[in-house]
Image 1 (spheres, rainbow, N blue to C red):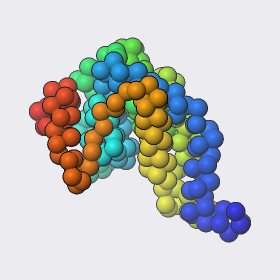
Image 2: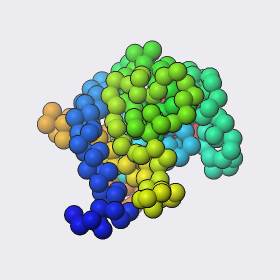
Image 3: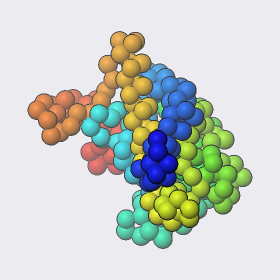
Length: 247
C-alpha cells in the first residue's frame, strides 16, 4: 500500500481491520463456538453496553441476519439520546450494572456479550462480573490497548471477567484523524460492528458444519420476511420481552 494510502483515514481504518483479524481471529472462533453451544441448548444471548456502545447492542438485536435469541440487557439511564450527561454519570455509577443483571436474571446455558471500548467503567465491569458469578460465560468486545490508557474507575477491567475477549484494537481516545494529532473520526463503532459480523459469519459456518439451523431474523423488507419473523417472535417473544414491549 502506498504511503499516502496508509496514512489516509480509509487506509488507517483498513490497517486496523487487518490488525483486528490478526489479533482476534482465534477468539472469534471461540466466541462463535460458545454461542452455538448456547443456542443449541436453547439459551439466550444477553447483550450489554452503555453510551455509544448501545449502538452495538442495537446491532445485535432484532437485526436482519442476526440471532433471534438475543436480549438487550440495559438501563434507560445509559442511553445518551435524551440526556447525554446523565448517561455518562450512569455508566460510572456503582451498583447499576449489578441491578441490570438481577433484573435480566441470566442463567446457564445463556451467554452474555458486553461491548465497551475502554472496559473500565463500573457499568460494563459489574455486568460481566455478575454474569460470570452466575455461571454465564461472558464475551467481552473491548480494546485492551484503550483500556490500559483509560481512567481506572474500577479495580478490574471488563476483560478480567470474560471467557472470551475480542480485541477491537481501538486506539486510546477512539479518534483517528488527523494522524499526527487525532481529534475526530472515531472508529470504535466500525471496528466493534465488524467484529460482531465476523462472529456471526463464523457462527453460521459452525452451525452448517454441525447441521444446526440458526434462529436468525430476515429483513422485513424482502418477500417472506414477515412470515419468517413471526415464527421467531412466537418462539422467543415470551423470553425476550423487549421484542414486543411487554417489559
